[in-house]
Length: 584
Ligand SMILES: Cc1cc2nc3c(=O)[nH]c(=O)nc-3n(C[C@H](O)[C@H](O)[C@H](O)COP(=O)(O)OP(=O)(O)OC[C@H]3O[C@@H](n4cnc5c(N)ncnc54)[C@H](O)[C@@H]3O)c2cc1C
Image (cartoon, rainbow, N blue to C red; front, side, top):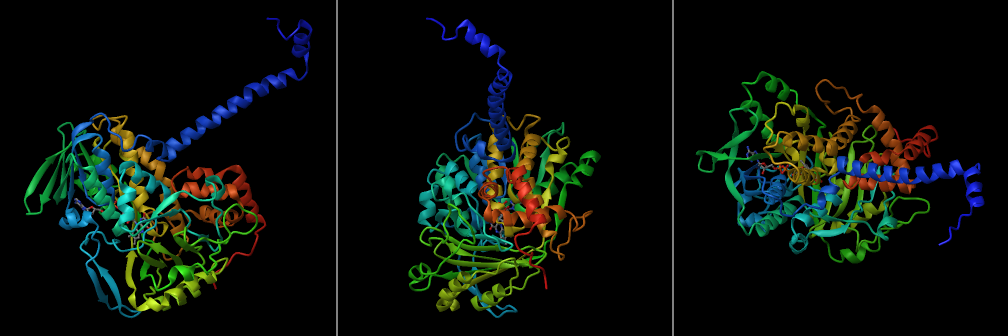
Protein backbone atom coordinates (compact mmCIF):
# COMPACT_ATOMS: atom_id res chain seq x y z
CA UNK A 1 0.00 0.00 0.00
CA UNK A 2 1.22 3.45 -0.80
CA UNK A 3 2.17 5.54 2.25
CA UNK A 4 -0.05 8.61 2.81
CA UNK A 5 3.10 10.51 3.76
CA UNK A 6 5.07 11.71 0.79
CA UNK A 7 8.70 12.60 1.28
CA UNK A 8 7.79 16.31 1.16
CA UNK A 9 5.02 15.95 3.73
CA UNK A 10 7.34 14.15 6.14
CA UNK A 11 9.97 16.79 5.60
CA UNK A 12 7.43 19.51 6.43
CA UNK A 13 6.34 17.73 9.62
CA UNK A 14 9.88 17.10 10.82
CA UNK A 15 10.89 20.70 10.22
CA UNK A 16 7.71 22.27 11.58
CA UNK A 17 8.28 24.52 14.62
CA UNK A 18 5.20 22.88 16.24
CA UNK A 19 6.50 19.33 16.00
CA UNK A 20 8.44 19.35 19.31
CA UNK A 21 5.32 20.64 21.11
CA UNK A 22 3.05 18.07 19.48
CA UNK A 23 5.52 15.29 20.36
CA UNK A 24 5.76 16.50 23.95
CA UNK A 25 1.97 16.66 24.23
CA UNK A 26 1.64 13.17 22.76
CA UNK A 27 3.99 11.87 25.44
CA UNK A 28 2.92 14.04 28.37
CA UNK A 29 -0.87 13.64 28.15
CA UNK A 30 -0.93 9.82 28.41
CA UNK A 31 1.85 9.93 31.01
CA UNK A 32 -0.18 12.32 33.15
CA UNK A 33 -3.32 10.20 32.70
CA UNK A 34 -1.44 7.02 33.68
CA UNK A 35 0.32 8.75 36.59
CA UNK A 36 -3.03 10.03 37.89
CA UNK A 37 -4.51 6.53 37.71
CA UNK A 38 -1.51 5.00 39.46
CA UNK A 39 -1.67 7.70 42.10
CA UNK A 40 -5.41 7.17 42.59
CA UNK A 41 -4.92 3.42 43.01
CA UNK A 42 -2.15 4.06 45.51
CA UNK A 43 -4.25 6.54 47.50
CA UNK A 44 -7.28 4.25 47.56
CA UNK A 45 -5.24 1.22 48.60
CA UNK A 46 -3.28 3.11 51.23
CA UNK A 47 -5.98 5.27 52.78
CA UNK A 48 -9.21 3.31 52.27
CA UNK A 49 -10.44 -0.26 52.53
CA UNK A 50 -12.38 -0.06 49.24
CA UNK A 51 -9.94 -2.17 47.14
CA UNK A 52 -10.14 -4.93 49.78
CA UNK A 53 -13.90 -5.24 49.28
CA UNK A 54 -13.49 -7.17 46.06
CA UNK A 55 -12.19 -10.35 47.69
CA UNK A 56 -13.98 -9.87 51.02
CA UNK A 57 -16.32 -12.73 51.87
CA UNK A 58 -14.67 -15.26 49.55
CA UNK A 59 -12.91 -18.40 50.73
CA UNK A 60 -9.10 -18.12 50.81
CA UNK A 61 -6.22 -20.60 51.16
CA UNK A 62 -5.96 -21.81 54.78
CA UNK A 63 -3.63 -19.63 56.87
CA UNK A 64 -3.55 -21.72 60.04
CA UNK A 65 -5.64 -24.01 62.18
CA UNK A 66 -7.11 -21.88 64.94
CA UNK A 67 -7.78 -18.16 65.24
CA UNK A 68 -8.93 -16.79 68.59
CA UNK A 69 -11.09 -13.67 68.78
CA UNK A 70 -11.21 -12.00 72.21
CA UNK A 71 -14.64 -10.37 72.48
CA UNK A 72 -17.85 -11.22 70.62
CA UNK A 73 -19.43 -7.84 69.98
CA UNK A 74 -19.64 -6.03 66.63
CA UNK A 75 -15.89 -6.03 65.90
CA UNK A 76 -15.56 -9.62 67.17
CA UNK A 77 -18.46 -10.88 65.05
CA UNK A 78 -17.25 -9.25 61.83
CA UNK A 79 -13.71 -10.45 62.49
CA UNK A 80 -14.89 -14.01 63.18
CA UNK A 81 -16.78 -14.08 59.88
CA UNK A 82 -13.68 -12.81 58.02
CA UNK A 83 -11.43 -15.36 59.72
CA UNK A 84 -13.75 -18.22 58.81
CA UNK A 85 -12.52 -17.71 55.21
CA UNK A 86 -8.91 -18.27 56.30
CA UNK A 87 -8.87 -20.73 59.23
CA UNK A 88 -10.19 -24.21 59.98
CA UNK A 89 -11.52 -23.09 63.34
CA UNK A 90 -12.37 -19.68 64.80
CA UNK A 91 -12.93 -19.45 68.56
CA UNK A 92 -14.76 -16.36 69.82
CA UNK A 93 -14.43 -15.85 73.58
CA UNK A 94 -17.05 -13.52 75.10
CA UNK A 95 -17.72 -12.94 78.82
CA UNK A 96 -21.39 -12.10 78.46
CA UNK A 97 -23.37 -15.34 78.26
CA UNK A 98 -26.55 -13.69 76.92
CA UNK A 99 -24.68 -12.24 73.94
CA UNK A 100 -24.02 -15.81 72.82
CA UNK A 101 -27.61 -16.96 73.21
CA UNK A 102 -30.08 -17.75 70.44
CA UNK A 103 -32.27 -15.00 71.84
CA UNK A 104 -29.55 -12.42 71.01
CA UNK A 105 -29.12 -13.81 67.49
CA UNK A 106 -32.90 -13.94 67.02
CA UNK A 107 -33.01 -10.18 67.44
CA UNK A 108 -34.40 -9.82 70.95
CA UNK A 109 -32.91 -6.52 72.06
CA UNK A 110 -34.80 -5.23 75.08
CA UNK A 111 -36.70 -6.62 78.03
CA UNK A 112 -38.99 -3.66 78.71
CA UNK A 113 -38.58 -0.30 80.42
CA UNK A 114 -37.87 1.02 83.89
CA UNK A 115 -38.15 4.47 85.41
CA UNK A 116 -35.07 6.59 86.06
CA UNK A 117 -35.08 9.59 88.37
CA UNK A 118 -32.99 12.40 86.85
CA UNK A 119 -32.38 16.12 87.32
CA UNK A 120 -34.65 16.98 84.42
CA UNK A 121 -37.48 14.77 85.78
CA UNK A 122 -38.04 11.01 85.81
CA UNK A 123 -38.24 9.16 82.52
CA UNK A 124 -38.60 5.66 81.07
CA UNK A 125 -35.49 3.92 79.81
CA UNK A 126 -35.12 0.65 77.91
CA UNK A 127 -33.90 -2.36 79.87
CA UNK A 128 -31.87 -5.14 78.26
CA UNK A 129 -29.48 -8.00 78.95
CA UNK A 130 -26.41 -6.67 77.07
CA UNK A 131 -24.82 -5.24 80.18
CA UNK A 132 -21.21 -5.06 78.98
CA UNK A 133 -21.86 -2.66 76.11
CA UNK A 134 -22.61 0.70 77.68
CA UNK A 135 -23.82 2.35 74.48
CA UNK A 136 -26.19 -0.50 73.59
CA UNK A 137 -29.26 1.78 73.49
CA UNK A 138 -27.53 5.02 72.41
CA UNK A 139 -28.37 6.45 69.00
CA UNK A 140 -26.02 5.26 66.26
CA UNK A 141 -25.38 6.48 62.72
CA UNK A 142 -23.37 4.62 60.07
CA UNK A 143 -21.46 5.14 56.84
CA UNK A 144 -21.77 3.70 53.33
CA UNK A 145 -18.74 1.43 53.72
CA UNK A 146 -20.43 -0.44 56.56
CA UNK A 147 -23.37 -1.49 54.38
CA UNK A 148 -20.99 -2.62 51.63
CA UNK A 149 -18.92 -4.71 54.06
CA UNK A 150 -22.02 -6.33 55.56
CA UNK A 151 -23.42 -7.17 52.13
CA UNK A 152 -20.12 -8.75 51.07
CA UNK A 153 -19.77 -10.80 54.23
CA UNK A 154 -23.40 -11.86 54.51
CA UNK A 155 -25.38 -12.42 51.31
CA UNK A 156 -28.57 -12.60 53.42
CA UNK A 157 -27.89 -9.36 55.30
CA UNK A 158 -30.50 -7.20 53.57
CA UNK A 159 -33.29 -9.70 53.99
CA UNK A 160 -32.65 -10.35 57.66
CA UNK A 161 -32.07 -6.65 58.37
CA UNK A 162 -35.25 -5.49 56.61
CA UNK A 163 -37.19 -8.18 58.46
CA UNK A 164 -36.01 -6.65 61.73
CA UNK A 165 -36.94 -3.09 60.81
CA UNK A 166 -33.61 -1.79 59.47
CA UNK A 167 -34.19 1.01 56.96
CA UNK A 168 -31.94 1.24 53.90
CA UNK A 169 -31.97 4.81 52.68
CA UNK A 170 -29.70 7.27 50.84
CA UNK A 171 -26.73 8.49 52.90
CA UNK A 172 -28.38 11.87 53.47
CA UNK A 173 -27.98 13.22 57.00
CA UNK A 174 -28.99 16.82 56.17
CA UNK A 175 -25.87 17.88 58.04
CA UNK A 176 -25.31 21.48 59.06
CA UNK A 177 -21.67 22.02 59.91
CA UNK A 178 -21.55 25.07 62.16
CA UNK A 179 -24.93 25.84 60.61
CA UNK A 180 -24.01 25.42 56.92
CA UNK A 181 -25.58 22.83 54.63
CA UNK A 182 -23.49 20.42 52.54
CA UNK A 183 -23.62 19.77 48.82
CA UNK A 184 -23.81 16.03 48.34
CA UNK A 185 -22.97 14.19 45.11
CA UNK A 186 -26.56 13.50 43.98
CA UNK A 187 -25.56 14.15 40.36
CA UNK A 188 -22.88 11.43 40.49
CA UNK A 189 -25.45 8.83 41.56
CA UNK A 190 -28.28 9.62 39.15
CA UNK A 191 -30.19 11.88 41.53
CA UNK A 192 -29.81 9.78 44.67
CA UNK A 193 -26.98 8.72 47.04
CA UNK A 194 -25.49 5.35 47.99
CA UNK A 195 -27.44 3.55 50.70
CA UNK A 196 -26.72 3.34 54.41
CA UNK A 197 -28.49 1.15 56.97
CA UNK A 198 -30.43 3.28 59.46
CA UNK A 199 -30.94 1.34 62.65
CA UNK A 200 -30.16 1.31 66.34
CA UNK A 201 -26.95 -0.31 67.53
CA UNK A 202 -28.85 -2.99 69.42
CA UNK A 203 -30.79 -4.03 66.31
CA UNK A 204 -27.65 -4.01 64.18
CA UNK A 205 -25.74 -6.19 66.64
CA UNK A 206 -28.62 -8.70 66.68
CA UNK A 207 -28.78 -8.73 62.86
CA UNK A 208 -25.02 -9.34 62.61
CA UNK A 209 -25.33 -12.16 65.18
CA UNK A 210 -28.14 -13.69 63.13
CA UNK A 211 -26.06 -13.36 59.95
CA UNK A 212 -23.01 -15.00 61.56
CA UNK A 213 -25.19 -17.86 62.78
CA UNK A 214 -26.61 -18.33 59.28
CA UNK A 215 -23.14 -18.16 57.69
CA UNK A 216 -21.77 -20.70 60.16
CA UNK A 217 -23.54 -23.81 58.88
CA UNK A 218 -20.21 -25.68 58.86
CA UNK A 219 -19.66 -24.80 62.54
CA UNK A 220 -16.19 -23.32 61.94
CA UNK A 221 -16.96 -20.46 64.30
CA UNK A 222 -17.24 -21.60 67.89
CA UNK A 223 -18.54 -19.28 70.61
CA UNK A 224 -17.14 -19.82 74.09
CA UNK A 225 -18.44 -18.18 77.23
CA UNK A 226 -15.47 -16.77 79.15
CA UNK A 227 -13.05 -13.92 79.71
CA UNK A 228 -9.60 -13.81 78.15
CA UNK A 229 -7.14 -13.07 80.93
CA UNK A 230 -3.67 -13.54 79.40
CA UNK A 231 -1.60 -14.47 76.38
CA UNK A 232 1.09 -17.14 76.09
CA UNK A 233 4.29 -16.36 74.19
CA UNK A 234 6.40 -18.75 72.07
CA UNK A 235 9.86 -19.65 73.41
CA UNK A 236 11.52 -17.40 70.81
CA UNK A 237 9.14 -14.58 71.83
CA UNK A 238 8.07 -13.86 68.23
CA UNK A 239 4.44 -14.98 68.40
CA UNK A 240 1.57 -15.88 70.69
CA UNK A 241 0.83 -19.57 71.04
CA UNK A 242 -2.35 -19.46 73.13
CA UNK A 243 -4.69 -17.37 75.25
CA UNK A 244 -5.64 -18.08 78.83
CA UNK A 245 -9.31 -17.69 79.67
CA UNK A 246 -11.59 -18.02 82.66
CA UNK A 247 -14.68 -19.85 81.53
CA UNK A 248 -18.26 -19.32 82.67
CA UNK A 249 -17.82 -21.82 85.52
CA UNK A 250 -14.73 -19.97 86.79
CA UNK A 251 -12.19 -22.55 85.57
CA UNK A 252 -9.03 -21.55 83.75
CA UNK A 253 -8.57 -22.88 80.22
CA UNK A 254 -5.85 -22.55 77.63
CA UNK A 255 -6.89 -22.14 73.99
CA UNK A 256 -4.08 -22.58 71.47
CA UNK A 257 -4.00 -20.05 68.65
CA UNK A 258 -2.25 -19.37 65.35
CA UNK A 259 -3.72 -15.86 65.39
CA UNK A 260 -5.03 -13.76 68.30
CA UNK A 261 -7.36 -10.83 67.60
CA UNK A 262 -8.20 -8.33 70.33
CA UNK A 263 -11.83 -7.21 69.99
CA UNK A 264 -12.37 -6.30 73.65
CA UNK A 265 -13.63 -2.81 72.81
CA UNK A 266 -12.87 0.27 74.86
CA UNK A 267 -11.24 -1.88 77.57
CA UNK A 268 -8.39 -2.39 75.08
CA UNK A 269 -7.57 -5.60 76.92
CA UNK A 270 -4.96 -6.71 74.38
CA UNK A 271 -2.53 -3.97 75.38
CA UNK A 272 -2.85 -4.86 79.06
CA UNK A 273 -2.32 -8.56 78.39
CA UNK A 274 0.64 -7.91 76.08
CA UNK A 275 2.18 -5.70 78.76
CA UNK A 276 2.02 -8.61 81.21
CA UNK A 277 3.13 -11.20 78.64
CA UNK A 278 6.18 -9.18 77.53
CA UNK A 279 7.04 -8.06 81.04
CA UNK A 280 10.46 -9.75 81.01
CA UNK A 281 11.58 -7.78 77.94
CA UNK A 282 12.64 -4.23 78.94
CA UNK A 283 12.57 -2.87 75.37
CA UNK A 284 9.08 -4.25 74.77
CA UNK A 285 7.85 -2.99 78.14
CA UNK A 286 9.09 0.54 77.55
CA UNK A 287 7.64 0.60 74.01
CA UNK A 288 4.23 -0.71 75.11
CA UNK A 289 4.10 1.85 77.90
CA UNK A 290 4.08 4.68 75.34
CA UNK A 291 1.56 3.27 72.86
CA UNK A 292 -1.73 4.48 74.31
CA UNK A 293 -2.90 8.08 73.98
CA UNK A 294 -6.11 9.22 75.59
CA UNK A 295 -7.98 12.43 76.28
CA UNK A 296 -11.29 13.33 77.89
CA UNK A 297 -13.81 15.28 75.78
CA UNK A 298 -16.37 15.23 78.65
CA UNK A 299 -19.30 14.43 76.39
CA UNK A 300 -22.81 14.16 77.81
CA UNK A 301 -25.44 12.84 75.44
CA UNK A 302 -29.04 11.79 75.35
CA UNK A 303 -31.07 9.65 72.95
CA UNK A 304 -34.86 10.01 72.96
CA UNK A 305 -36.77 7.35 71.05
CA UNK A 306 -40.32 8.19 70.03
CA UNK A 307 -42.98 5.83 68.64
CA UNK A 308 -44.70 7.07 65.47
CA UNK A 309 -47.69 9.24 66.39
CA UNK A 310 -50.94 8.84 64.43
CA UNK A 311 -50.84 10.19 60.84
CA UNK A 312 -47.12 10.91 61.12
CA UNK A 313 -46.24 10.11 57.48
CA UNK A 314 -49.03 12.29 56.18
CA UNK A 315 -48.03 15.17 58.45
CA UNK A 316 -44.28 15.06 57.99
CA UNK A 317 -44.77 15.06 54.22
CA UNK A 318 -46.29 18.54 54.60
CA UNK A 319 -43.18 19.93 56.34
CA UNK A 320 -40.57 21.46 54.06
CA UNK A 321 -37.26 19.88 55.10
CA UNK A 322 -34.82 22.16 53.33
CA UNK A 323 -31.23 21.07 52.78
CA UNK A 324 -29.67 24.41 53.65
CA UNK A 325 -27.89 24.49 50.30
CA UNK A 326 -28.14 27.72 48.34
CA UNK A 327 -27.47 28.47 44.68
CA UNK A 328 -27.78 26.16 41.70
CA UNK A 329 -27.10 22.51 42.43
CA UNK A 330 -28.20 19.09 41.29
CA UNK A 331 -29.45 17.94 44.69
CA UNK A 332 -32.92 18.44 46.13
CA UNK A 333 -33.92 21.73 47.70
CA UNK A 334 -36.27 19.83 50.04
CA UNK A 335 -35.95 16.25 51.26
CA UNK A 336 -38.51 13.62 50.30
CA UNK A 337 -39.46 12.05 53.64
CA UNK A 338 -40.69 8.87 51.96
CA UNK A 339 -37.15 8.21 50.73
CA UNK A 340 -34.80 9.94 53.17
CA UNK A 341 -34.55 8.52 56.68
CA UNK A 342 -32.51 11.24 58.36
CA UNK A 343 -33.83 14.76 58.67
CA UNK A 344 -31.31 16.91 60.49
CA UNK A 345 -27.83 16.90 62.03
CA UNK A 346 -26.16 19.94 63.59
CA UNK A 347 -22.45 19.88 64.40
CA UNK A 348 -21.59 23.25 65.96
CA UNK A 349 -18.25 25.01 66.06
CA UNK A 350 -17.08 23.75 69.48
CA UNK A 351 -15.67 27.16 70.27
CA UNK A 352 -19.13 28.72 69.87
CA UNK A 353 -21.56 26.12 71.23
CA UNK A 354 -21.45 22.73 72.92
CA UNK A 355 -24.82 21.44 71.66
CA UNK A 356 -25.08 18.80 68.94
CA UNK A 357 -28.49 17.84 67.53
CA UNK A 358 -29.79 15.07 65.31
CA UNK A 359 -33.19 13.70 64.34
CA UNK A 360 -34.40 10.95 62.03
CA UNK A 361 -35.95 7.51 61.74
CA UNK A 362 -34.60 4.37 63.33
CA UNK A 363 -36.14 0.90 63.13
CA UNK A 364 -39.83 1.45 63.86
CA UNK A 365 -39.81 4.97 65.20
CA UNK A 366 -38.23 8.39 65.47
CA UNK A 367 -35.07 9.27 67.33
CA UNK A 368 -33.78 12.60 68.65
CA UNK A 369 -30.18 12.92 69.77
CA UNK A 370 -28.68 15.78 71.76
CA UNK A 371 -25.49 16.29 73.64
CA UNK A 372 -22.04 17.72 73.55
CA UNK A 373 -19.14 18.92 75.62
CA UNK A 374 -20.28 19.16 79.28
CA UNK A 375 -23.87 19.53 78.21
CA UNK A 376 -27.12 19.48 80.12
CA UNK A 377 -29.32 16.55 79.11
CA UNK A 378 -32.86 17.21 77.88
CA UNK A 379 -34.93 14.18 78.85
CA UNK A 380 -38.33 15.22 77.46
CA UNK A 381 -39.37 16.50 74.04
CA UNK A 382 -40.26 19.84 75.62
CA UNK A 383 -36.77 20.12 77.11
CA UNK A 384 -35.34 19.11 73.74
CA UNK A 385 -37.13 22.08 72.17
CA UNK A 386 -35.66 24.54 74.69
CA UNK A 387 -32.24 22.98 74.25
CA UNK A 388 -32.40 23.38 70.45
CA UNK A 389 -33.72 26.93 70.75
CA UNK A 390 -30.59 27.87 72.69
CA UNK A 391 -28.14 26.63 70.03
CA UNK A 392 -25.82 29.20 68.48
CA UNK A 393 -24.25 28.65 65.07
CA UNK A 394 -23.68 30.60 61.86
CA UNK A 395 -27.26 29.73 60.85
CA UNK A 396 -30.06 28.96 63.31
CA UNK A 397 -31.69 25.57 63.84
CA UNK A 398 -34.29 25.42 61.03
CA UNK A 399 -37.98 25.71 61.78
CA UNK A 400 -38.67 22.22 60.40
CA UNK A 401 -36.77 20.67 63.33
CA UNK A 402 -39.26 22.25 65.73
CA UNK A 403 -42.17 21.28 63.47
CA UNK A 404 -41.10 17.62 63.71
CA UNK A 405 -40.91 17.95 67.49
CA UNK A 406 -44.46 19.34 67.42
CA UNK A 407 -45.64 16.31 65.43
CA UNK A 408 -44.24 14.06 68.17
CA UNK A 409 -45.90 15.85 71.08
CA UNK A 410 -49.04 13.64 71.08
CA UNK A 411 -46.80 10.70 72.11
CA UNK A 412 -44.46 12.70 74.38
CA UNK A 413 -45.41 10.53 77.35
CA UNK A 414 -44.43 7.33 75.52
CA UNK A 415 -40.79 8.17 74.75
CA UNK A 416 -37.80 6.24 76.11
CA UNK A 417 -34.58 7.97 77.06
CA UNK A 418 -30.93 6.94 77.30
CA UNK A 419 -28.54 9.36 79.01
CA UNK A 420 -24.81 8.74 78.87
CA UNK A 421 -21.32 10.15 79.17
CA UNK A 422 -18.11 9.65 77.23
CA UNK A 423 -15.10 10.41 79.36
CA UNK A 424 -12.34 8.89 77.32
CA UNK A 425 -11.24 8.72 73.71
CA UNK A 426 -8.15 6.63 73.11
CA UNK A 427 -5.86 5.30 70.43
CA UNK A 428 -3.27 2.54 70.74
CA UNK A 429 -0.43 3.23 68.28
CA UNK A 430 0.41 -0.45 67.71
CA UNK A 431 2.12 0.42 64.42
CA UNK A 432 4.92 2.02 66.47
CA UNK A 433 5.72 -1.30 68.14
CA UNK A 434 6.35 -3.49 65.10
CA UNK A 435 9.73 -4.60 66.43
CA UNK A 436 8.41 -5.85 69.78
CA UNK A 437 4.89 -7.11 69.12
CA UNK A 438 4.21 -10.81 68.61
CA UNK A 439 3.72 -11.06 64.86
CA UNK A 440 0.39 -12.92 65.09
CA UNK A 441 -1.39 -10.41 67.33
CA UNK A 442 -3.80 -7.82 65.88
CA UNK A 443 -6.68 -5.71 67.21
CA UNK A 444 -9.95 -4.60 65.59
CA UNK A 445 -12.59 -2.02 66.57
CA UNK A 446 -12.51 0.08 69.71
CA UNK A 447 -9.67 -2.15 70.94
CA UNK A 448 -7.36 0.02 68.82
CA UNK A 449 -9.21 3.35 68.73
CA UNK A 450 -12.17 4.79 70.63
CA UNK A 451 -13.41 7.99 68.98
CA UNK A 452 -15.73 10.66 70.23
CA UNK A 453 -19.08 9.07 69.28
CA UNK A 454 -20.52 12.36 68.06
CA UNK A 455 -18.92 11.51 64.70
CA UNK A 456 -20.78 8.18 64.63
CA UNK A 457 -17.91 6.19 63.18
CA UNK A 458 -17.04 3.36 65.59
CA UNK A 459 -18.99 0.60 63.87
CA UNK A 460 -17.77 1.42 60.36
CA UNK A 461 -14.25 1.67 61.76
CA UNK A 462 -14.65 -1.87 63.15
CA UNK A 463 -15.84 -3.03 59.71
CA UNK A 464 -12.83 -1.31 58.12
CA UNK A 465 -10.54 -3.12 60.57
CA UNK A 466 -12.05 -6.52 59.73
CA UNK A 467 -11.79 -5.73 56.00
CA UNK A 468 -8.17 -4.63 56.36
CA UNK A 469 -7.40 -7.85 58.23
CA UNK A 470 -8.95 -9.86 55.41
CA UNK A 471 -6.75 -8.02 52.88
CA UNK A 472 -3.57 -8.69 54.88
CA UNK A 473 -4.48 -12.37 55.36
CA UNK A 474 -4.76 -12.72 51.59
CA UNK A 475 -1.05 -11.79 51.34
CA UNK A 476 0.50 -13.15 54.53
CA UNK A 477 -0.06 -15.98 56.98
CA UNK A 478 0.03 -14.90 60.65
CA UNK A 479 3.28 -16.86 61.00
CA UNK A 480 4.97 -14.42 58.59
CA UNK A 481 7.16 -11.90 60.35
CA UNK A 482 5.51 -8.97 58.53
CA UNK A 483 1.94 -10.00 59.33
CA UNK A 484 1.04 -7.95 62.41
CA UNK A 485 3.22 -4.99 61.41
CA UNK A 486 1.58 -4.81 57.97
CA UNK A 487 -1.90 -4.93 59.44
CA UNK A 488 -1.29 -2.21 62.01
CA UNK A 489 0.44 0.07 59.49
CA UNK A 490 -2.41 -0.30 56.98
CA UNK A 491 -5.00 0.31 59.66
CA UNK A 492 -3.11 3.37 60.89
CA UNK A 493 -2.96 4.82 57.36
CA UNK A 494 -6.69 4.29 56.96
CA UNK A 495 -7.80 5.62 60.34
CA UNK A 496 -5.29 8.25 61.48
CA UNK A 497 -7.35 11.08 59.95
CA UNK A 498 -10.35 9.95 62.05
CA UNK A 499 -8.32 10.21 65.23
CA UNK A 500 -6.77 13.57 64.34
CA UNK A 501 -10.05 15.08 63.15
CA UNK A 502 -11.99 13.91 66.19
CA UNK A 503 -9.34 14.96 68.69
CA UNK A 504 -8.55 18.33 67.15
CA UNK A 505 -12.24 19.22 66.99
CA UNK A 506 -12.65 18.28 70.65
CA UNK A 507 -9.64 20.44 71.51
CA UNK A 508 -11.72 23.37 70.26
CA UNK A 509 -13.80 23.15 73.44
CA UNK A 510 -12.05 24.44 76.54
CA UNK A 511 -13.61 21.78 78.79
CA UNK A 512 -11.69 18.98 77.02
CA UNK A 513 -8.74 17.53 78.93
CA UNK A 514 -6.05 16.93 76.29
CA UNK A 515 -3.73 13.94 75.90
CA UNK A 516 -0.77 13.88 78.23
CA UNK A 517 1.98 16.13 76.89
CA UNK A 518 -0.41 18.08 74.61
CA UNK A 519 -2.33 21.34 75.01
CA UNK A 520 -5.64 22.43 73.51
CA UNK A 521 -3.63 24.61 71.11
CA UNK A 522 -2.94 21.47 69.10
CA UNK A 523 -5.02 21.28 65.89
CA UNK A 524 -5.59 25.04 65.79
CA UNK A 525 -4.93 25.30 62.07
CA UNK A 526 -7.19 22.28 61.45
CA UNK A 527 -10.05 24.02 63.28
CA UNK A 528 -9.46 27.27 61.41
CA UNK A 529 -9.45 25.38 58.12
CA UNK A 530 -12.51 23.25 58.96
CA UNK A 531 -14.65 26.24 59.91
CA UNK A 532 -14.03 27.81 56.54
CA UNK A 533 -14.27 24.52 54.66
CA UNK A 534 -17.77 24.09 56.14
CA UNK A 535 -18.84 27.20 54.24
CA UNK A 536 -17.19 26.03 51.03
CA UNK A 537 -19.03 22.67 51.29
CA UNK A 538 -22.30 24.54 51.16
CA UNK A 539 -21.62 26.05 47.73
CA UNK A 540 -18.99 23.91 46.00
CA UNK A 541 -19.99 20.60 44.38
CA UNK A 542 -16.44 19.22 44.13
CA UNK A 543 -15.66 19.98 47.78
CA UNK A 544 -19.01 18.52 48.89
CA UNK A 545 -18.40 15.36 46.87
CA UNK A 546 -14.84 14.92 48.19
CA UNK A 547 -15.99 15.33 51.78
CA UNK A 548 -18.98 13.02 51.33
CA UNK A 549 -16.82 10.22 49.93
CA UNK A 550 -14.19 10.67 52.63
CA UNK A 551 -16.76 10.70 55.42
CA UNK A 552 -18.30 7.50 54.11
CA UNK A 553 -14.89 5.81 53.92
CA UNK A 554 -15.07 5.63 50.12
CA UNK A 555 -12.15 7.96 49.33
CA UNK A 556 -9.10 9.34 51.13
CA UNK A 557 -9.61 12.44 53.27
CA UNK A 558 -6.73 14.02 51.31
CA UNK A 559 -9.12 14.36 48.36
CA UNK A 560 -10.91 17.10 50.27
CA UNK A 561 -7.66 19.08 50.28
CA UNK A 562 -6.93 19.62 46.61
CA UNK A 563 -5.20 22.91 45.70
CA UNK A 564 -8.52 24.16 44.29
CA UNK A 565 -10.43 23.46 47.50
CA UNK A 566 -7.58 24.86 49.61
CA UNK A 567 -7.69 28.09 47.58
CA UNK A 568 -11.44 28.37 48.12
CA UNK A 569 -10.95 27.89 51.85
CA UNK A 570 -8.20 30.52 51.95
CA UNK A 571 -10.44 32.88 49.98
CA UNK A 572 -13.20 32.31 52.54
CA UNK A 573 -10.60 33.08 55.20
CA UNK A 574 -9.76 36.41 53.61
CA UNK A 575 -13.26 37.39 52.48
CA UNK A 576 -15.85 35.57 54.66
CA UNK A 577 -19.26 35.15 53.04
CA UNK A 578 -20.89 35.99 56.38
CA UNK A 579 -19.64 36.99 59.82
CA UNK A 580 -18.65 34.09 62.07
CA UNK A 581 -20.98 33.50 65.00
CA UNK A 582 -19.20 34.10 68.28
CA UNK A 583 -19.95 32.99 71.79
CA UNK A 584 -21.89 35.60 73.79
C1 LIG B 1 -22.61 6.93 73.41
C2 LIG B 1 -22.01 6.29 72.21
C3 LIG B 1 -22.56 6.54 70.96
C4 LIG B 1 -22.00 5.95 69.84
N1 LIG B 1 -22.51 6.26 68.61
C5 LIG B 1 -22.00 5.68 67.52
C6 LIG B 1 -22.55 5.92 66.24
O1 LIG B 1 -23.44 6.74 66.07
N2 LIG B 1 -22.03 5.25 65.18
C7 LIG B 1 -21.01 4.36 65.32
O2 LIG B 1 -20.59 3.76 64.33
N3 LIG B 1 -20.45 4.14 66.51
C8 LIG B 1 -20.91 4.76 67.61
N4 LIG B 1 -20.36 4.49 68.82
C9 LIG B 1 -19.22 3.58 68.90
C10 LIG B 1 -19.63 2.13 68.72
O3 LIG B 1 -20.69 1.78 69.58
C11 LIG B 1 -18.42 1.27 69.01
O4 LIG B 1 -17.36 1.73 68.20
C12 LIG B 1 -18.65 -0.18 68.70
O5 LIG B 1 -19.69 -0.72 69.45
C13 LIG B 1 -17.36 -0.93 69.03
O6 LIG B 1 -17.56 -2.27 68.89
P1 LIG B 1 -16.46 -3.25 69.48
O7 LIG B 1 -16.90 -4.60 69.12
O8 LIG B 1 -15.11 -2.79 69.09
O9 LIG B 1 -16.53 -3.05 71.06
P2 LIG B 1 -17.72 -3.33 72.09
O10 LIG B 1 -19.03 -3.25 71.42
O11 LIG B 1 -17.47 -2.44 73.24
O12 LIG B 1 -17.51 -4.84 72.53
C14 LIG B 1 -16.41 -5.32 73.25
C15 LIG B 1 -16.70 -6.77 73.61
O13 LIG B 1 -15.55 -7.33 74.22
C16 LIG B 1 -15.97 -8.12 75.32
N5 LIG B 1 -14.83 -8.22 76.24
C17 LIG B 1 -14.36 -7.28 77.08
N6 LIG B 1 -13.31 -7.76 77.76
C18 LIG B 1 -13.09 -9.02 77.33
C19 LIG B 1 -12.13 -10.03 77.65
N7 LIG B 1 -11.18 -9.83 78.55
N8 LIG B 1 -12.22 -11.22 77.01
C20 LIG B 1 -13.16 -11.44 76.07
N9 LIG B 1 -14.09 -10.52 75.73
C21 LIG B 1 -14.05 -9.32 76.35
C22 LIG B 1 -17.18 -7.38 75.88
O14 LIG B 1 -18.00 -8.22 76.66
C23 LIG B 1 -17.85 -6.91 74.60
O15 LIG B 1 -18.78 -7.85 74.13
C24 LIG B 1 -20.89 5.09 69.97
C25 LIG B 1 -20.33 4.85 71.22
C26 LIG B 1 -20.87 5.46 72.34
C27 LIG B 1 -20.24 5.22 73.67
